[in-house]
Structure formats: structure tokens, C-alpha cells
Length: 457
Image (cartoon, rainbow, N blue to C red; front, side):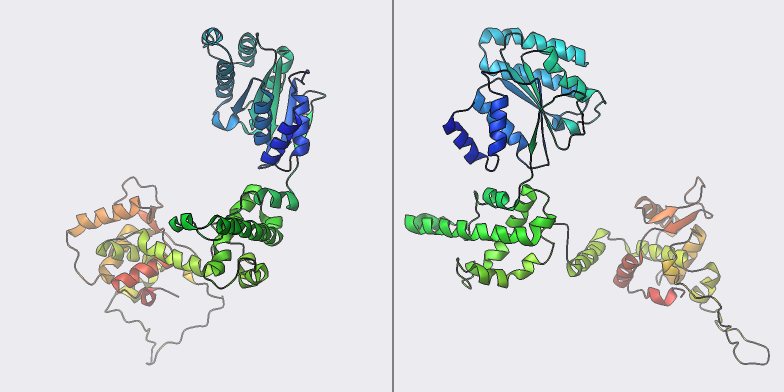
């Protein structure tokens, strides 16, 4: 068992984990025999790894910690286990033992090889603790990984294996009588105690702080601690209780909201102890969920950012822009209306016998805008014909330059080939435009083209 003063020190360093610290210290005491396997489980950010490492450092027992997130495969995990055990023993043993350990450099390809090498490495140790941190999330792990590692303590009598996992399944080690130590999630009181240990400053640090008196510095630190603890309680009650996943997420939310919350104090509009006024003035901070995730944006900022991204996403040349507009018109206009929109000498009205204008028949079906039906396939020669009809200037370079621009649009995925023809520049190849209405609106405004006048309803 750890001395009383050391337990007090650990409780101060790792708050709200007194019960777990005492249980770990009792189970891993070097003066008594420890269980061959121990499962430490709990949700993320509950202090499992920190507590286990602090207890092992305090007990002065040789130990090795293997992080599964740093291992790519199960074989990599086995080899890292051997290396970690050798490094742990080299730190506490003399040079002769280090020379003997350097001879164990063979590959470790199976669990039997791991057991043999560990037994040879630990033959002179009275007690050794091997910790597998996050082993339940090991990549490319076979189904026999955890049961095989759990039996290492039975094969090597002086070895204790500790598994740090998140949510273990029932009998996930295929062993009976395995002690489990649960790290419960932090409640409101525990979260506030942990966050209050490192309060943020109300006033930004500056070079002039060195000239402040010691009394003023202590007064500012007291104000920081007083306001920070109440602020964290307000964040927990409004956002953290239902949205923050763990203590780390809650701390991140508090750090994002702290600067705008104390800005009235920095501007001289409120005092450092006027928490109620600050809460009323900044109530909008606790009513939105934008602080929970940096990717959550307001609607206005999202629209503005989208427009800026569209404008800056691709800067097309002049004739390439017209070519993309022609492809959009070919995808969303029926081919039978090309003469109506793109032939100048076409007579748009039908004449009936006897004079007058023919009256259109009322449609029996409700019309759906073609923009909502999605882009349709078209042949390349139709797109080129529309391009020549809408372009106000002659195209320099001839057909070869036009084909290269089509190939550029295809490589940038603005045009998608839908036919199975091998030659993408064949006149009969079918294409489909791959840009939306918002993007087309932006690029047509840059060239002064009224695309609405050429779209079918």
C-alpha cells in the first residue's frame, strides 16, 4: 500500500479518482502477489491511462506500456511489446543485464514466440507489469489477440497484464475471475473541480504585467478563479450536460466561449465580480450550439462562405467559360428547342390557316422545372453548335484549341463522359455537365451572359 503522503499527492494530481487510486495501489502492491490479469475500463477521457501510469511510477515496480494506436498490425504489437519490456529493464538494471537483453533481437511473429521471449527476458525479475493501452481498438487484430495476451500472466508467473479498454464485452478475455476496475464518467461537481484547477486569465497577459505589484497579481488570480468556476458551471448547465461528450470537450467549449464572455470586462463595461450582469449580457453565447463544434456555422456565414468559395474555386478562361455554359444549356434544354433559342432567323410563332396566331393547348400534366430533373446527356457536336451560337467573338485557334478546352473541362470533372466510346473528342461522344446552378450563375455574371433567357421553363 502506498504511504499516506503519497496518496494525498496523487489525489491532488489526479482529482476525483480517490477510489480507483486506492484499488490500483492495493492490487499492484509489490509486497503482495498481484492478479495475472487486470481489466481497467471506462469511457474516453476518464483518466484511465493517467492514473495507471501515475500509480506504477509511485510503486517503483518495473513496467512497460504498449500503445495500440501506434501499432499497425498484430505482429507490430507483439514486436513493440518485446522492445518496450527490454527498454524498461535497461533503465533499472546494470550494464551486464543490458548486454544480455541486447541478445534478444529475434523476430516475434506469433503468441508462442512472444511468451518464450518474455519468459527469457523476465526470468530475473520478481515482479513485472505489462500494460496494453487501447488494445480493444487495435487495427487488424485477430479474434484470439486478447485471450492470448491475457494468458501471458498464467505462463509467466511474475507477470501482471493490464488491459486499458473503453467498453469491454462480457467475458472478452475468455477467462473467469478477472478483476475489473471501472472509471466512471465525471459528473457536474467533478468536472467543475477539475476545470477549476487551471483557470484562464480575464485580462490578456502583456509585458507590462511585470510592473504590477504582488498584491494586484494575487487579486487578479483570485478574480480569475472566482469567475472561471462560475462560468464553467454555466457552460455545463446550458451546453455541456447534454452535448459535451467528456471533460476534454467541455474544456474546449469553455475555452472558446471565455474570451467573448470576458470581453465586457476588458472593455471596462462590467466588473470582475459582476457574474449575473455578464451572464445576461452574453446570454446568446449559451443559446447557440456553434461553440460545440467549430464546423457548425450560422446560416448567413455559410451562404457568404459558399459564394466566396464558388468565386475562388476555379478561374476559367474566357472561351472555356462560354464552353461550360454551352454544356449546361445542352444538359438542361431539350434538343427540339435549340432552334428556338439559338437560331436568329427562326420564326418562334406558329401560323395557322386563315391568319392569326395559334393558341397553345393547355397541358394536362403539371410542369416540373428542368433544373430539378438533373442534367441530361448530350452529344459533343450539339454543345459545340450552342457554343458558337452564344459566343459574341470568333474563337482563335480553330477546332484544335476548342478540343483542348473540352479535354480540360473533362479532366477537371466539370464535364463527365456518359458514353462508352473510346475517343472522348469524337463528335458523337455523349457528355453531361457536372456543375450546379449556383456556380453557373456566378460565372455567367463574370462574362455578362444572361443565361436565364436561354433556359427552357
